[in-house]
Image 1 (cartoon, rainbow, N blue to C red):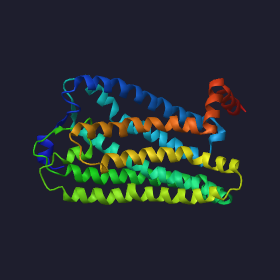
Image 2 (cartoon, rainbow, N blue to C red; image 1 turned 60 degrees about the vertical axis):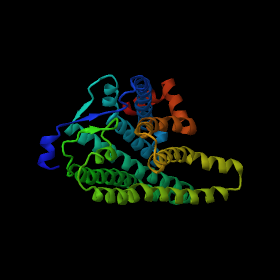
Image 3 (spheres, rainbow, N blue to C red; image 1 turned 120 degrees about the vertical axis):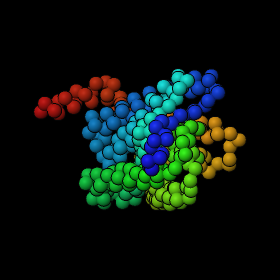
Image 4 (tube, helix red, strand yellow; image 1 turned 120 degrees about the horizontal axis):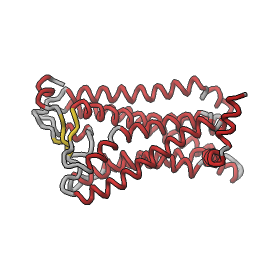
Length: 318
């Protein structure tokens, strides 16, 4: 960011739903409850994956990554947003806004890539089960996870550098709940064509390409499942990937509706949709995996009975 920008804008004002105080109070209660479910649910999933040896597999390793990412993603903006719902003055410092922009972009990009990796894991498990230990070894899983996180954060860094190099001419009122990149670009008083071009290219690479890979993986998975002779076998094979497929549909469905819908009559609808994407969607992941995955449900029941902790303690003392 240029020197004139740094001296002219030291903080930003986040409008939120300015003028809709009652609605904001409703959103405060809803978002606080959903955020609590998100943090507790995803932390529980991570805990179960650590404690239960039956969940020490590539699928649950990537699920733990997804859960950790959902906690970090919502925590990057929800706590401050909740505070702003209760305050008349809704400002965020320039460094805070820059960090918020960077984290939300990075974690959103990483989730696209991680969902594709999880689809590939299910493809190998169902279509090439004999090669699964070789293709999804511990080292390979670590490399794929590192590549997903590294690509997501590198993509966000590139967007952040280009965004903060723009001239904002003292404009500091962001018509959103948090420092969202499209809302920030609307404040720029210079040429943003390079930012738009970069957005289109990176969207194709980070969002569209993983989605196509997911679709291709599930085409092969579906073909393999249909070749299974027994209905029970088909049901068992599909149950191992139904939770992931549900998460993918919700994630990409929300993105598609948010960015490819017809122009809204007012900006408030766009902000509500972005809020749903940022707050509600991550909280659904632990619920979906808990309801649709027998191994996770078994691990949760074992934790409630105290079996997991006693087993972990016993193995530690041996």
